[in-house]
Image 1 (cartoon, rainbow, N blue to C red):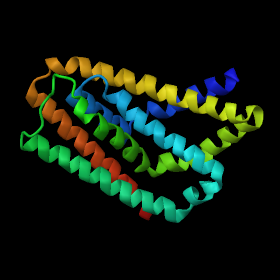
Image 2: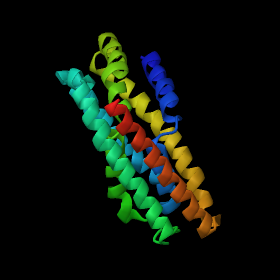
Image 3: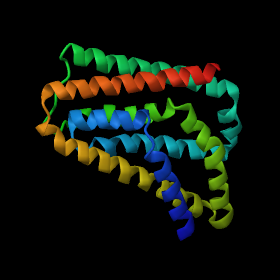
Length: 207
């Protein structure tokens, strides 16, 4: 069972450390609200992964793999990322964005939901679980039953918490020393990255 847990941990690290919209959003929120942002983002992300695992075992993996599902996720998800990117850029240009040095607990729900939605907006994430993730889940289930699946999920989620928590703490602890102009420039740059990812998702779903 240890091998199942460790393999999930390593596989998840390889994905978590790759740049993408979820990491971009985590950096933005860590700059804006503090060191706990990454942990909250991953709670939403992990909730979606748990839902996907349940759907896969209910037989929805073929639906998630279908061209129609991938096109729909790519178009809707891409549009969401593009909107968020422009919102960040416009907010920076109009000086509507500032650093909150007090931890803002009122944003917790919004950050959690965004973690869920940004993950759902990524067609490659959904496809990974429907194809690659399914293979690992079946191996874990055949070897150890439901306990194996839960162990794989735990290792996978732990890697996300470790990496995104590390990024969040690193960014959140240095933000108080950052000039406001530099902060807004970084936010605008992160907005451009979200637009790029969004356009990539839309393009990938059409062509």
